[in-house]
Length: 162
Image (cartoon, rainbow, N blue to C red):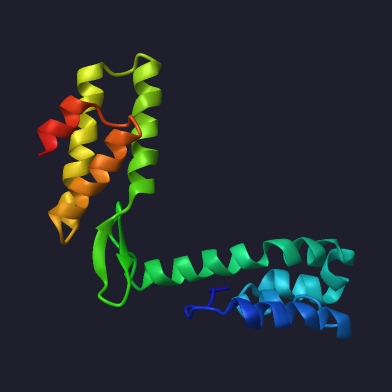
């Protein structure tokens, strides 16, 4: 069955979860558009309560993943490496994205899959790509400075960015 294409609220999902206390287990899954497992939970009282209990702790993440899927289908996600901030919807560099990408490059370098020069070139390419998606270059330079202070960029790499 096709999943729901509207964003869901965590509060409503938890209220649906509470419906298990009046014998309606799985209402939170039906709310998310998970019809198959919702009906399974309904007829088995949440897999004898075990699935219902597990969902209590994972429901917030389930709703977040659902909402991310809806946003990606509607093309409302920011470009990779950027995020939207505040009411101005200004795209700013996402330092966590850069850290993850640099960590992958470091693993490749330490595994002798790429040379130091290749790792350095790829880091700069990643930052240039993020800069092209960003509205303000000074934000990118600021984030690059933070990466340099965390020893994720060398002095030479940072100088080449400027």
